[in-house]
Length: 144
Image (tube, one colour):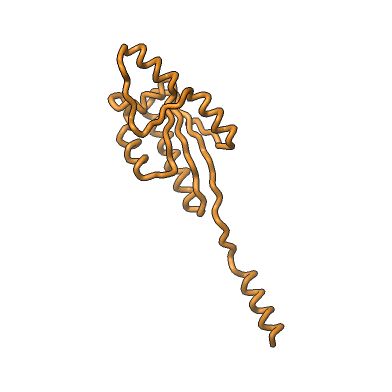
């Protein structure tokens, strides 16, 4: 009787689905164009990737890096996606925004005055270098 109980218990355990912790994925998105379509596509991709992995029981850490003309997405007076960035930053703890310091300094020099960036964006020394660093940390790279 004990052997049959043990066999039934073992069979029950083996038939149960495994509930392992989900994986964590890392993705870097790159925007270097002052094009509302590209900016919106990047933000759509961020949302879609996050929703997909969360539906699989996984997590995803996302960093969107902007440099060159793409840095305009973080300039409040110029950004066609400022409201989306603000809303996404509040709703998505897995998302961060990196602004190229080289591009920002060039914008300031050209304007002859400060060019404030959205508070959601963190200035990094170089957008290109940041993308390299993220890829060296095994982030997948996406350029919409």
